[in-house]
Image 1 (cartoon, helix red, strand yellow):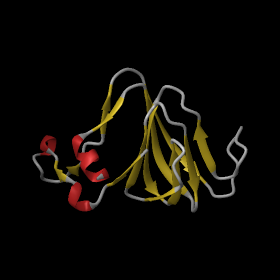
Image 2 (cartoon, one colour):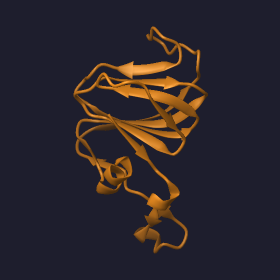
Image 3 (cartoon, rainbow, N blue to C red):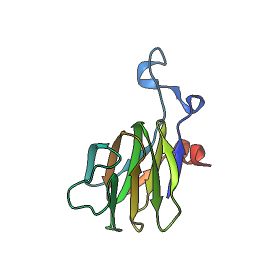
Image 4 (cartoon, rainbow, N blue to C red):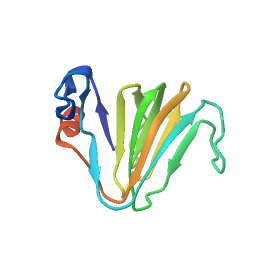
Length: 129
């Protein structure tokens, strides 16, 4: 698992807009089928088919996963790591050979991207360092 922090200083002028109104940071690119979901997790709410409340997770299933937190706080764990805090403006990348868990400590809204071959951009890797 890699935790990525999107601090304001990491953004750069977006060339498509000639830097007038939009700053952006490339996150990841991939090939093949990609699934993008908006997730809304509440602490204490049990998702269908899940044992614990306020927890989302999967076993390693051959897909990379990238969670981008838009609002809220929680904890993430991947590949047997301890629970790491995550908050608005951060992302967590889980390689396809790792299972993962996402815990909501407050109402958490995020974008969860699932793909067969996601690769983090160089800028995202620098933000993870």
